[in-house]
Structures are given as C-alpha cells and as structure tokens.
Amino acid sequence: MIRLEKIDKYFGGLRVLNSVDLQLASGNVTALIGPSGSGKSTLLRCVNLLEIPESGALELGDQRLEFSRDQRPSREAVLTIRRRTGMVFQNFQLFPHLTVRQNVMEGLVTVLKWDKDKARARADELLEKVGIAQKADAWPSTLSGGQQQRVAIARALAPSPEVLLCDEPTSALDPGLAAEVVEVLKQLAVEGMTMLMATHDLRLAATIARDVVFLNNGVVVEAGPSREIFMQPRAPETERFVSTLTHSLPDEWTEPGGAGRR
Ligand SMILES: Nc1ncnc2c1ncn2[C@@H]1O[C@H](COP(=O)(O)OP(=O)(O)O)[C@@H](O)[C@H]1O
Ligand SMILES: [Mg+2]
Image 1 (tube, rainbow, N blue to C red):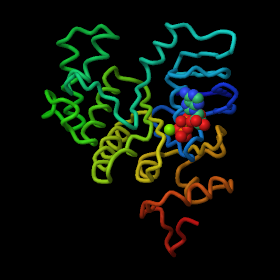
Image 2 (image 1 turned 90 degrees about the vertical axis):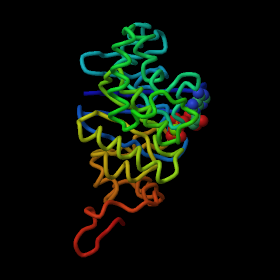
Image 3 (image 1 turned 60 degrees about the vertical axis):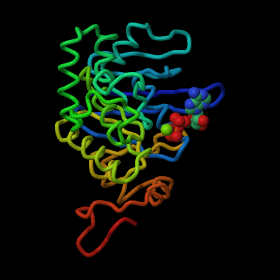
Image 4 (image 1 turned 135 degrees about the vertical axis):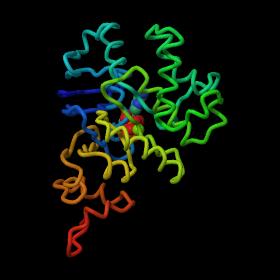
C-alpha cells in the first residue's frame, strides 16, 4: 500500500500540488489524468522523491516519511524510497553511451552493488520479459521509440520496485509503437504490479487502470474506479476534461441500448 497524505509542493511561490491525498492498493493500477501543467509529473516525482514536498506524508509499506519545510528527509530515507519505486519517463532517458543490457544493469551494479554476473542475468531476464532480448548488445539510438521505452521499463523493474511510476509512457510514440508499450504495461498489470501512471492515452487509462485520479491545478478533483470517472464523472471539470480525450472507450463499457459516454 502506498499512501500520500496532504502533500503540498511549491516551486517558488507557485503551489503545484495542493493537499493531495492518494492511496494505491498493492497490485492495483491507477491512471493519473489531467490537463498539461496540472501537476501530474510533479506528483509522480514526489512519490519517488525526485522532488521533496514541503508538507504532508508519504507511506510506502512500512516506511513513513513526514515532510516539513524545516527538515529535509535523510539521504538514507530518500535512497530507500527510490529503491522501492521505479520510474519510466516520457522520453525514455536511456544512457546513450551504454548498450541496452548495460542500461538495465547500471543501477544494479552502481547503486545496489550487485556483482556483474548477477546483474547481467537479471537484465537478460527482464529484456526477455519485455520482448527485446535480441537487442541486448545494441545501442539505444539504433532502437525504435517503442523498443527504447521497453528497455526503460526493464531498467525500472530491475531492482524489483514495489511500485512502477510511469510519466506519459506512450505519449512520445506513434500509435503502433505505443501499442507495443501498452502491451508490456498490460502484462505487468495482469501480473499484479502496482502502478501509478500519468497518461493522456485512453487505451492505458481505460483498459489497464482500475482506478483513475483526475488532477486539476494541483488538486485531486475526483478519484475512483475508471469506469465511473469516464462514464459518470461527478465534477464538471472532470466531465469537460474526459470529453477531450479522443480515443474511444472499451466496447464492453458501452451499455446495451447505446448509452455510451456522456
Ligand atoms: N522544476 C520546476 N520548477 C518550476 N516550476 C515547475 C517545475 N516543474 C514543474 N513546474 C510547474 O509546475 C506545474 C505543474 O507541472 P507538471 O507537474 O509538469 O504538470 P503536468 O505533468 O501535469 O503537465 C506547471 O505550472 C509547471 O510549469
Ligand atoms: Mg507531465
């Protein structure tokens, strides 16, 4: 279980997250939706402490951190949280000077001090899992965007994180390449990976995520089962935003008699 309580994040005078509460049950996939600039990336970065909130609390399993302006969390606490969370970025962020396999091994060897043979075996296992074992010795720049993102997913999974954070994992990809990334994420969801992902991709949000959180101006406007948020949003802001997401909703959501999305 991951819990955020009353998280506030400021950049200078700008309050980017405003008392955000969020609970992610283990094994559950939650989509984070909202307009550009609403704070989705910042929220994800607060979960793995790439950004440190000014106030509120973060609970990850048995670890609880309370934030205040007066005291930053210890380096040790930050590293522990980092280790327990994996992050996948919109633009992959692979190391260009390392091969695909080395990209996946890198954190295991340099941060977790695994020996190289063990790290290599783990990398190969994960590259197999994301369907890209044949590219293990290739340079990232020779791969398609979809392949690069699958490598990035393998890298994020390497230390066996308890939650995978994905920041618009398909939005830099053409539809065909996005589909192969959606397939990999869908498989992880089926296997029970806990995930929080910011996305504008309805295939991701509606078909993989059980829950949806709608963020607007740093405020959680509405959260709940994805079907409810997409089909019967309570807040007008949610309804307006959902109607801007253009892909069609899953067929099984269309009620007999044709009552689709409002
Ligand atoms: N490092 C930063 N410094 C200053 N402002 C930032 C920084 N990162 C994000 N912001 C601002 O915070 C707000 C939320 O940004 P972001 O979390 O990237 O939103 P989203 O991912 O939903 O598009 C925006 O107004 C953005 O300009
Ligand atoms: Mg963003």
